[in-house]
Amino acid sequence: MRFIFIQFIVLVVFVGCSKHDDKVLTNSSELYVGTWVNSQFTDSVYIISRSNDFVDNQDGFRINADGTFVQRINSGGCATPPISYANYPGSWTLFPDNTLFIESENWRGVISFEIEIVEVDKDKMVYKTRY
Image (tube, rainbow, N blue to C red; front, side, top):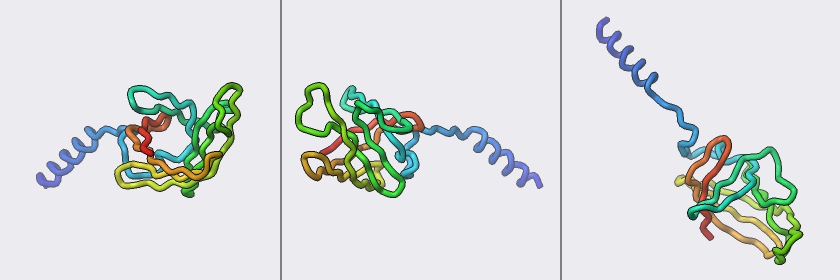
């Protein structure tokens, strides 16, 4: 009986001291699925915010649970204002090291790149891009 009581106390201590951190990277695509906008580049990483939908005059991307990807970027080679944006289809694959491999079409043709996820939570994603 004493042994069971000690096990119960140890269990309570471990459960009570565990800390949930929603910035912890797990190999789960649920963290990445969604629409991401308002990308800002700082200190060699991009910081992007989760949104309900794309913003009219901004770039961004959408990661869908079914493996499809939508990239919203400028729709032509001229980047002088006013800039027009378009949505281009693609696909994504999650690697065990929390890197997303992206293949997408755009006005230049088919491109592929990797997004190395540094941090992700319910509101923002921090990542590096590798071409």
